[in-house]
Image (cartoon, rainbow, N blue to C red; front, side, top):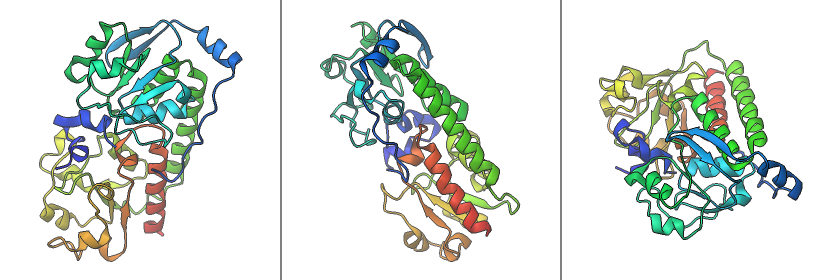
Length: 314
């Protein structure tokens, strides 16, 4: 099984933050003016409550290393792109992000320090990397996989405060809230459509209590995975028979880029050709990366789900 797909299983949740472009992409932020940079610098030192506790950053960071694809997307979205000097090998958005061979799965202190970072952002403290970097006076923010929207918003605000881009981060969060609220309010919820989200071809799925599940929850969809025997963990492994019996109205595939899955490949699976979603052309191909991250592009995911629900309900 691919690491990206296993990432969302509770035992390997860390990988989600390191894995992986979308329908709507933010334009690359322009470099801050000297006046705005000076104003931002005057706000320091700042203290951020991250996943690794309170982290104090003495000066506005100008050499940021991101080992989290979600954090990378967020940093560029809030205007901190010019401050980023290196990102991990899986940070593939935006295209201008300075991708390197650095690994979030196997972080190497010596390799990270070569970039002379004054801030490192990670999704999980693998191999106690935060403490190791702290020993060489490099502040580290651990921003783990979000469990709900508020958690995702908090992380964006954390990065805004930590990088001197607090105002831009607040505006981004406000924009995300408004758009998600709008999409949810306009969603036709009367039919109570059911769905299956394929996280992995094994197949693993997600329940309504996960971050991805909460995106679908905005639209009043019924998650077939909630009835799975091992649903309590949030990422149950479903049998082909279970899915065929549930016969979901909609199927969302987060296995398109990784595994080449689509409506035709699903139809070839034993017992699946008669599924309503396949017969009615309600198989939605997602961007694997967008569907596995909890940053600004969650709005793109929500728009995709919104379009699918409108089409199915109409």
